[in-house]
Length: 574
Image 1 (cartoon, rainbow, N blue to C red):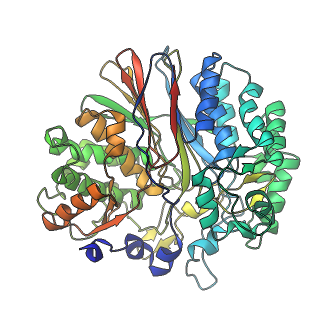
Image 2 (image 1 turned 90 degrees about the vertical axis):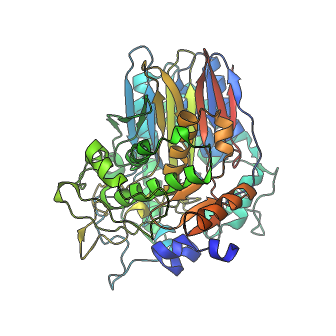
């Protein structure tokens, strides 16, 4: 049975070589964390230091945006494998007084000199995954600091400089290396190759810093202090920008990032992408993220199957979920990319008539026999992408004392990004989220590389509102393209089944990305997989599915928060 369950999805999608090389951020165990209640404000982040920083800002009268900025900067220090100022992210903000909901786009952009052949060899074949990742070629213009500054200008209350203090203290004084960071450092095959990274993260003999060992990062502290004093432009112009460009261009696998690319970067405000589900309004990110739209498509397909009447986490319910995900991922793969290259809009894919048509592909009694084809609204042509999107990412959810909220997901893509450390921070490899093959016999793909374009993302920070328009939940997760299923599954648990957030997070994950059905490799997951195979005919792979779900839901007049048992996140509030 196990042999049958262990069909490798990556081999199906990307070929054996990529399957052997491209692995998401590793699992490092489960520790069940019960939900926490708070009456006034709450923060859920991926690391205790970041949660403490967010709570200290909220306690000092800071806004949800202020707390999110402080936590994101601390995460750069203590969780360098996942996010930071060398990467980008997406932020959703809700202002309770006005009801305004805003999406902030801090996604990386390709250099002006990039073209659609960015990850093709001279013979026209795609590079191997890590041949593309490691070094300068994969690095996009970082967007995180510009996004945070834009959001702070709109809804920050405390001074910008104040928000950097927790991260600067930790970078200067040091912090004990966690079990998770040690395990990831020890397992990585490429980070030691960078001289600066080896000096920071490893001992003189090349071993990963031990658990409990003190990690100090004075170079990062200097950069953070400069940005705290001078604003985000200090990062995008001048000495810091020059160090980034020099590092990218001098790498063994050089990139084409320029000083002009950095100087010209701007974060953007975008309209949130919302849809109705079971009387709630679910809001997420629009393109260049496919996260918001694909989550809404999964939920739109599930409406027809009355999930509220299914037993929570039951095989039948998870069969319906997997098949809805299969169909939605067919559309995600075909239609999403940089907004300027998309020929189909999220509104087309979420139209009721279109969802009704697509739902006909789902057989309640039997899994589809392999991948399904994307739909063809507007007579557009679809092209299959080749992009592994296996990022290392971090999510935080925050509600402040005034009821304003932030859901923010940030990333440097693969664990430790491009493995290029500059001035104490790691640079992203987000450009490998573009389709390596820009075209095939069916035409051009919207997720093809090009000058100034943003690669498709699956990050899915999410805000949920009840029928009265009041905030009900803030959530999101890391996990690459699995993020979409982690978030959609959590919404089903919260909305359809009325489960508390810690109970939803504890359910074994089920994910289908238009191929094999992947089930979390736990005793409960193995039992579920047996039924999915034997009763519904799924091809199943048991595997680690290392989400990092951080969820806040309204609980009467207060809040109930939960951090994922699969990572080292915590909940704080009062």
